[in-house]
Amino acid sequence: MESILLGVFEQGMIYSIMAMGIFITYAILDFPDMTTDGSFPLGGAVTVALMTSGITGIAVFGLVIPSYIVALPLAFIVGAAAGVLTGVIHVKFKVRDLISGIIMMTALFTINLRVAGSANVPIFSRDNMFMNPLVSSVFTGNGKKYSTLLIIFFVVLICKLILDAYLRTRSGLLLRAVGDNPQFVTTLARDKGNVKILGLAIANGLIALSGSLMAQWQRVFDLQQGTGTMVIGLASVIVGMSLTKGFSFIRATTAVILGSIIYRGCIAIAIRFGMSANDLKLITAALLFVILVLSREKKKKVAHHA
Amino acid sequence: MLELYGIQKYYNPGTVNEMCMFSDFNLVIPEKQFISIIGSNGSGKTSLLNIICGSIPIDEGKILLDGVNISKWEEFQRHRKIGRVFQNPALGSCPHLTILENMSLADNKGKAYNLRYGTNRKRLQDYRELLFQLRIGLEDKLDVKVGNLSGGQRQALSILMSTMTPIEFLILDEHTAALDPNTAETIMQLTDRIIKEKQITAIMVTHNLRYAVEYGNRLLMMHQGHIIIDKSGAEKEAVTVESLVGKFSEISIELGN
Image (cartoon, rainbow over all chains, first blue to last red):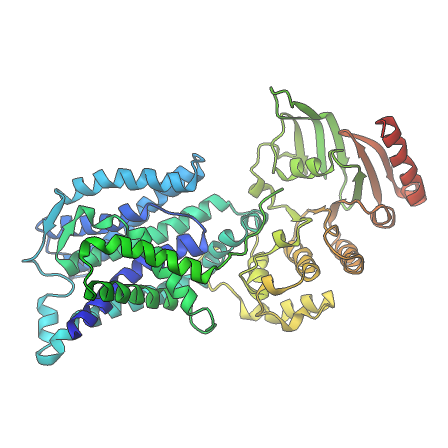
């Protein structure tokens, strides 16, 4: 029972970083970003490519940073690049938002395969974020069980705090404005397209970072892993935001993290009641549907004209 | 100074619905002029504003702002010098952001939207004073989301925000049309005060003939893409609502209505 609960929290929190990305595209930008299904495994692909490349670390100011840590910012950058491409396809080439994401997602399928080398790359024997000399020296005895959870918690906390801080900067305010009222951004003499591209970059960076953590946690890269990521993220965002609606002091990012953990909990319960892993996608779809109908949150949208 | 020369604009070119909005349209607006534009529906008032702002492209002609040809500029580029208030109060602010956040964004127009803290606490007192001048009790509501305000409050805020940074041109697109008569009156007086205080050049499209007569120092009446009345200075002072109503019915008879 305890190990199931640990798994729920661990997976829920890893996926919550991805859900923060979905929060940016879905809740802030109002952009149905299908890139997610490609950028999540992209983070994993980059990670296993780096870890199997033989490079064990990179020296920064005389300090050797192990490759499993370098993988995280690297995944963010590569994911952000994918987001920029989706944005450029949409903004500069005027392709519909949904289609732009689908184009990128499809292209990434091949790219992920090329980057990772094959559709299934195990990294069992290698050091990773959760199993390395430092972790085994710090956590001994009873604490060992919780080391993984603590590390994930730490990474999620950093992502959350940085994202919260960013959303309160001038650039962050402009990002929130573009989803709320694009015309307002234009009257501020800013190119709303570029702001959208920036938002997609940050979102897909976070999604790929989450994918990198997931590959390290599972100790294997699986090309198929990305399918359905966006729906999981959507479910987490909607669950989190609906459940915390009455509590104005809960920040949206916190709500998203809670949503992601609750989503994992629901999945774990479903499996415990005898549903097989093959039924997961159906459970997710049903869950998303039920939550959407229950919450019925009609987004206030500004009429686009003039 | 804003100059429009030889503007040509066709809607739906090459189709059966092809319609010529403007052909060889010319207009010169000197600095510090406050123009009100009236005209029946489809006369080209809003099209003219959209052409100036760059929301719709022109087929031919050029638009000069202080001698610089801006006809190829994107809409957002033109807004470096132009402020705009829309008929729909919702278009002038962000509903999910607070008044403070909206004002901070507007205050930063023309500067970089970088990683510095979004709301500047040092400016808080200035914002309060600006809001106090609106006299609608917004000065205590800086942390309220704009979506919770009434249409009139949002429109007042829109006008305030559109003129927070130095602009050369203010475009008012039927900005009192969606408000109740009382609020419309307040907003109109506020607009006039801000334009006079800041000495901005302004173009106001309105369906309210009384506003067109009472406010501004030049009056244009448009009909089928042409200017049929253009009065400024003393001539404008002499214009009455009755004379305008007369002109409107003349046009209607012409069209066979």
